[in-house]
Image 1 (cartoon, rainbow, N blue to C red):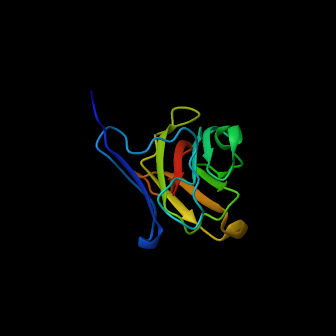
Image 2: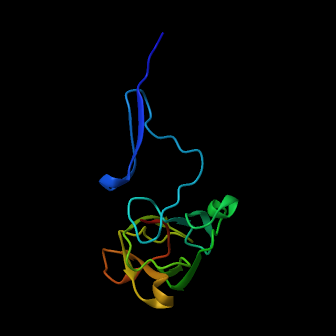
Length: 153
């Protein structure tokens, strides 16, 4: 017979809402989406995979519920403003969040793959929008269309 220890306690007076400890396997298993207030850190707020050709292929919006949270476009809008330049409207304030951006091979032909990308978080649309630029770094300023993944924390 196996015995497992699992301790779960509330410790609000110590500044911790929920603490868990396990001597067996996973400490926390969540079957469903996780949501956190926008002002706090630690959980993903938004994720987008954009194909570089006008379509959000995969997405997750932690502020939506049910299938809308991960059914593209999940309330997001990506607008191509120029070659290799995009504006993303998340529908909630993002210009004070952390971002992670990864580019993929250039889309639409034999163009070079992007070697660098920039994220510009600005106050556009009440802070809801950011700008992404994908750049072929051999010639700075030589932008190329690109698929990309972006995560907002």
